[in-house]
Length: 546
Image (cartoon, rainbow, N blue to C red; front, side, top):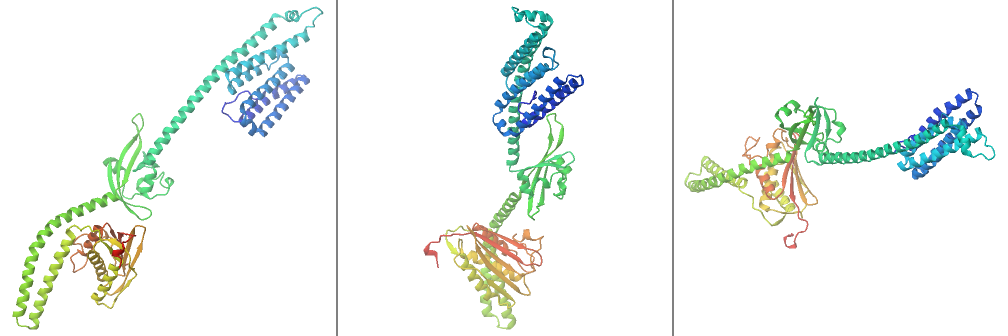
């Protein structure tokens, strides 16, 4: 029979416990009684064991129903337990039965499975049933003469029997009081523990959500420098798909050049990290010790951020500061150069009419005129690079600008070993200055031609995105060395034997001046593709359409 059960335990465990107790107590009792020759008692106990096995099987088969109505199931179980226990006690001697303690177990179970009041009721019922068994046994042992009352028979039974019965009943009551008190304390402690667990779970979830919601990456390490946790942002920054791919590894295994000893000693570090997908990310690290409440170090906390955009902004700021300084210089330099150049140009024209028109004289005059013109163009490029781009509200057809520029450029270069395939269509409107855009495209085409001294193919394509227009200019030239890609838009940087290094810098200045950007995809020996992106205007007024 089921006598002890965790209130929150399952039906299956209670049935198993019931079978075990029945087998140990009643099964062994039946064997003992049978050995002593009390076959009637042994047979009765064996039948009770079989009944309990049968009821346990029924409980398992009706498990779903019992789980739906647990209180009714427990009350029914208590009833059968009292009936079966009383039967065992009656058969095995009543007041002298060694199984009277079964009532105690049933009282304890009632206080655990139900309530304190249920234990009192169970103790009362157990006491009444036990008294009935005792009185029945008295009548069987002490025959009642006619005219003699039951109390006279009780007196003949003896004071010892009465005292024994009294102590049994008192014991039932005390067990009910004690077990009821302890079960209530147990339930109260369980509720408090459940509330504590819920609070702890809420705090743990809050802590986890805070860590996972941080915009910085967080990695924790043990004292051996092995990773024991990483938050979601950190995995996204590192380009790692799952936490399991880095757990148990050292930082240096996937961050080449980063050493924990240096990071812990310096507290701050910055490095260039290559993600698994090939992205180059600038990471900024800071570290601190992971300590417990006793201020004992158990590991390290590494906090890091993606500083790529910050680094780019810093580079742009430095470039802007450089351009501002150059702008001030350009304004004064242009003024100081243009006047002398104009005077030199005028003097050359006058001298050209006075000198003898020999071949050498004409060559020298022509050379002087060309150099003056080249200096004028250099001053103009310098002014474009250093002076702010004027913001315009004029809509222009970028497609037509590209097509007109390509057509003019093809006639100018006059090289049969250069083929230009133009796949750009008209009707792509952007907000910019048509002259500046034409100059930017011209510089890119000229850069491609210079990269193909033995000739090649230039392909120009366009595509429209949701809010942008993209122009791609690709060539089959010698490409750009990976060591130089980050510097090709710097002013005065050039790898050509002849050149000022202002062409690509002007292109970037013009495109970014109209809220666009320009990128390059290239490697040494594999050509280059310059990608221009500008904001696109979908709805174009009729007066600007061609």
